[in-house]
Length: 337
Ligand code: TYM
Image (cartoon, rainbow, N blue to C red):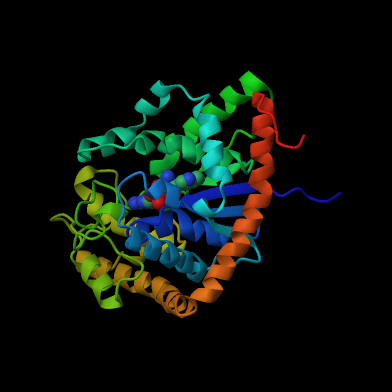
C-alpha cells in the first residue's frame, strides 16, 4: 500500500524584510521537515495588499522573498513554493468561504483589531484577511499549518469555517491543526522584548535582525538588545527578564540545544555582554550562508521565475479541482458539466 503523506500548508507575506522571528518561528521548521510531508509554501501577496503597498516595492519584495525561501533551503523537488496571486483558486475560494463566514467572527480577530487601531483607513480586505487565509489552507486539505504563535487565532478561525462548511454542505474539508514550534514561536523585539519582533517594525534600528542585514549590523543590533540590570543568564517568565529570555530563546532555537544545555553554556559567562556576543555569533553563522545563496539566486531572475511557475502549476493542480468541489457542493453550475 502506498503511504499517504500528510499535507502541510503555510504562508508568509512579501511585505517588509524577513526577520529572525519569521525565520525561527516558521521558515527554519519548514526547511527541516520538508521531506517528511507533502508541503505547500505560499508567498501571500494578496494578503500583503490588504494594507496599501508601493507597487514597485511589492514586486521587488515578492521576488526577493522567493529567493530567500529557496536560499534558506526549501527545495522545489521536495515541496511546492508559489506566489498566491499566480493561482486564482485562492481568491475564488475566499469568495466562496466568505459566504459561509459570519461577520462577527472576523470582527473579533485580535490582529484585525490591532491593525485597525494603527490605521486611518481600513480596507474591506483587511477584515476579510482571515477568510483568504482559510481558503489558502482548506483548498489543499492541509492537515498541518506550521506557524508562529501570532497566527494561532487565524488557524482556529479556519477550523471553525471548515467545520461550518462541512456541517452545511457535507464533508468537504480537512479540519487543519496549527503546529507551533516549541522554541522560536515568539521571538521578541530586541529593542522592546515585550512585543513580538515584526516585519512592520523591522525598519526601526535595533528592533530586529533582518535576514539580509550585513553581519556587522546583526552583531550591532544584538549587542544593543535591551536587557536588565542583573547578570543571571537563565530562562525566565519574569517580564523584567524578558530581554535575556529572548536572547536565550534565540540561542536555543538556532543551536537546537535543551534548556539545561543552554544555561550550562553560559554558566561561566561574565555577564550579559558574553551572552550577546555568543548569540550574535550563532545568528551570523546561521544566516551568512543563506545570504550568500540569496544573492546568487537574485542574480538569475529567469531561473527564479521558472521555479515559481513550476510551483504555481503544482499548486493549481490541487486547488483548482477543490474549488470546483466547493462550487458543486454549494449548488453552482460547473461550466461544461
Ligand atoms: P507573516 O508573514 O506575518 O509571518 C510569517 C510567519 O512568521 C511567523 N512570525 C513569527 N514567529 C515567531 N516570532 C515572531 N516574532 C514572528 N513574526 C512572524 C508567523 O507566525 C508566520 O508563521 N497570515 C500569515 C500568512 C499566511 C498564512 C496563510 C500562514 C497567509 N495564509 C496560510 C499559514 C497558512 C502572516 O501574515 O504571516
